[in-house]
Length: 235
Image (cartoon, rainbow, N blue to C red; front, side, top):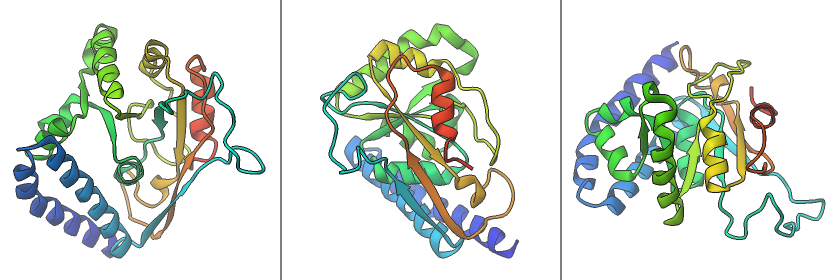
């Protein structure tokens, strides 16, 4: 418990100290992105030093010789895909931001209301959604996401829509399927066990958290197929 209290206190102090730096970064989208990504890297460093949490990222092999396959209906020639990730804590967000630095997230609009950090996330290009509007918002969302992908960014979405506990499976939101169909993008599932070490609520536990990138799924994959892939290795 002492480790958890110390970690959360130092994390809060860390975020406060970064606030003026993020304010400076608002003058430029490029500088702002660099500062936000650097801040996320600091979160991982703090988690390792104080929380004792390391992390590993696992990628699927293409075949037994590790030779990339020929492009097919699952692999676009430009390499673009929607990353659909399990969401358990801040930890996997920080890891994904380091592994895929040119990424952007779809987040609930309330995130943008956080002073300074919300402004930095908006400047960085995170896409807010108003969940209360439901399907009426999907057409506009698809257009915004399409423009960012055409600009070379990578979409990361948490299709469960909320942080989950280890062992918990939540039905996926259908918005993921809409975007995949609309943009003709395959889906790259990502599982994690980060909730074992940095849970939504409770004690921080030292150990090695994992992220698993699963094999690509086609844009017409079902929600059950996507959910099974995301949860295949997840805690």
